[in-house]
Length: 435
Image (cartoon, rainbow, N blue to C red; front, side, top):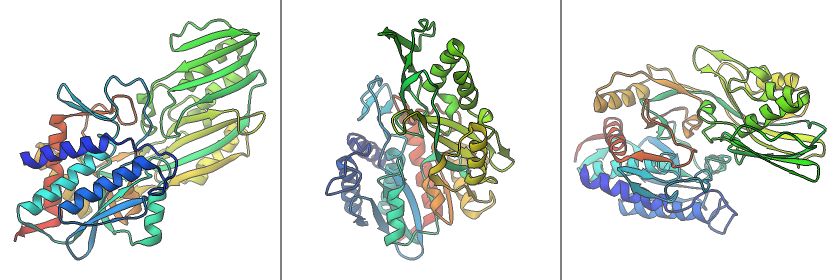
């Protein structure tokens, strides 16, 4: 496996080197030049493997090999933004036995491992027992318009997996909803702005308060007093919104300070918005299939409507509840009628005894020597668009998650293990004996 693994590392570095954060549309992609360049590189690579490729106007590309019923391997090449806090190069660096770069785990690296695993099996003389279709999306992180386009012009495979979650195998994904909320802004708040994406724990939040406040003792807060106003900046720690407890929300830091200094409306906001389980907003919910709801106030600003605080809230809810249930609870708790669904993905649940689940699980356990069971996540993957689909890797149990955080990285040892698991799983599921 050595040659193909090294090639997979090299191709991953090439893809990471392309900045594929969504940007202004261009003639090759509605999601920007970086996405277009990544899709072109994927098509060029897969074509050199003998696959049939198609680039759908920069929305997504498909790479096919084999004949018969289609099995999908779905992932994405777009990434979330990165900032200046990285200690490594966000566009790719190998250092101290680790690969650094935005997308190395989410999702360029895992999809490249799967692509090269198929290449290796073909080179070893194995024959696909179905049509294997890779779908590389260009808009997973900010809207899934790539999947919308696919469903307009093509037929989605019924079965498949997405290497965009956790090992050993994910058979249940919570409902994922982005809510847009408008509530009354405190009277002495002149301005507020924080967050970049609803699905990232807010890393920075700025506001201006009419009046002179005491300088904060919290080192995560910076203050400046000028012309009778207090300018505040809170610094948190980003994390994926499906695991908000792994980050520090800058809005929480700001509201906690304002609650202590001014009380009143700020205390009310702090109590309602600053709980990862949604308890303050009366959406602390759980079920036996999928566990607890998670709550992340990811974006806030004061510019959309005069006198209103504008919030984007990411909620991952248990599979037995609906987005409508949650919206009604938010309206009542936050005392507003202005709660709307901005984006959503319905829950996914595949029985743990399903053949697909068990085949992937056994491949993982055989390679690692473990004896684990399927799990539930709050993250949203392309597996949801399949009639029978699951997420499969790349995060290992107890592995530090740097997805959507600074210095996204994976050790070369874990990357090799990931490659071997995908190789054995794909061989078990999708290939027959040598030609």
